[in-house]
Amino acid sequence: MTSYRQPGVVLTDRRFTVPLDHSDPGGEQIEVYGREAVAASRAGEELPWLVYLEGGPGFGARRFVGTEAWLGRALREFRVLLLDQRGTGLSTPANRQTLPLRGGPREQADYLAHFRSDSIVRDCELIRPRLTGGAPWTVLGQSFGGFCAVRYLSAAPEGLKEVLITGGLPSLDAHADDVYRAAYPRIERKVAAHYARYPQDVERARAIAAHLAEHRPESAGHRLTPEGFQSLGILLGTGSGSHQLHYLLENAFVRTPGATELSDTFQEAMRTAASFAGHPLYALLHEAIYGQGERATNWAAERVRGEFPQFDAATALKGDGPVLFTGETIHPWHFDVDPALRPLRETAELLARRTDWPVLYDAERLAANEVPVAAAVYHDDMYVDTADSLRTAAAIRGLRTWVTDEYEHDGVRAGGPRVLDRLLSLVRDEA
Image (cartoon, rainbow, N blue to C red):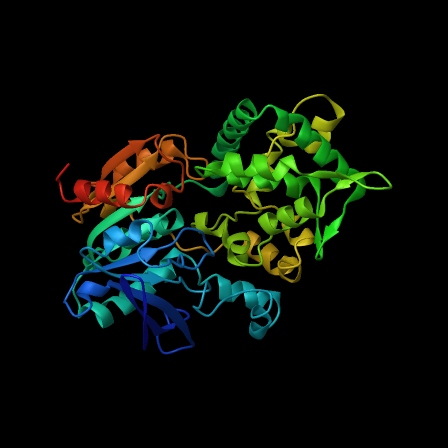
């Protein structure tokens, strides 16, 4: 282990060996990384543990500096493990560079089938006794991390002292088709709100989409397309995302000696925002996290989008309507335009066709839950359906909700200590 300091906090790098396939504990092993954080003033004390599960799938735990955001509040009473879930961050990363070590697309898809919440929870249960001596710990799950927390409650509640969930209560039984059928109207509402706030962006977005449709430029090997431009709507699910999108659009064009062109600044910003180079598992496993049973996900977001023709950029450009942004949806074309995903196209196809996904949630066990649970549910969350979240909250015995419109999906980041304080008070029946 290596320990080092940042302002107000002592950090320790921890690495754990876990089975790739938990049903074969003596088989292939992989490495999982976690960063321990403890307040500098309490580094020598015996403290209860909190494990943080990041949103995603496909994102390593946030790299905090010092005691910023919610971490400072957590460190008042916990020793925190910031866990890079398997395949992310420093935990045996899975990407276009490393996956060929597994073999071809079939072997890669079979490998990645072990990177969902069921395996992540099993990792946690191997790690927990090594850190706590066997004592249960507190889980804080953001977004997909909340999905993992609900799986934890279904599979290993004995490992849990209390559970805090922010924007991450999944439907217990919805197919991916249902998820995206509910998602597109939410996305459309967010786009309407953005255009109401920044009406000048209606024509800017049309002009950008038209230019991309005609010229199809590339930036560092990334093909810039109208559909890729629309996907920037993923920003609209965060607290400051509408403003970020507006600033991105406002300097899209520059005058050159030959013509008006898309600026290098815009092209680079679009490429950066649309690239999956830093989180390829988000694209590869985004629909797989909803897979349960024998029904394939089969590019659900792409198929369901056909039910919402208003999202078709070409149709919008032929008329005088606005170009609608999308977000939180993965499509086959992502694997054609993004150089970080292009080599993984066939692997993604095999995952989309897969029909042997284990069931993730145990409704009977959740109905009999005895672990204290509190969840922040955002009033019109673009990423996780509020109605689904509330149905799941009602299905988990004793779960207390905080339904709020003060924050968007990234509330635990934006609200920081206040959000964590509220959830801790709820879970401890102090509110």
